[in-house]
Length: 146
Image (cartoon, rainbow, N blue to C red):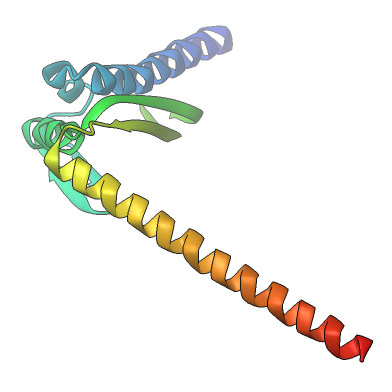
């Protein structure tokens, strides 16, 4: 194959891989688990910080379970780097996920309440710290005025 043919083949391969990365996110968001699983090799290993999934069936079942607590999800595949080397390729991309909680789900409702309690506690702690700082500043000003 001449240089132009090799360049064209590389571009076609690169486009197919980019399409696959986008299809992964699209099928995940649509909850189309069989089609989502098909974006992986049959013997794929999908590693996440909290788990490792083996094979298409396990990958799809785990994704379905992970996302069951959300009313909606949207994933973006960005910053795609695709390296073609003959008949093999390597890709790396960022997957950014937006997960909208389903507040009617009891587990999610509890998690949201815990997050709200934590936020309120954080606000209360910052209010106390600010009040102490204001009091210390006022005391310092009174002391300086004497």
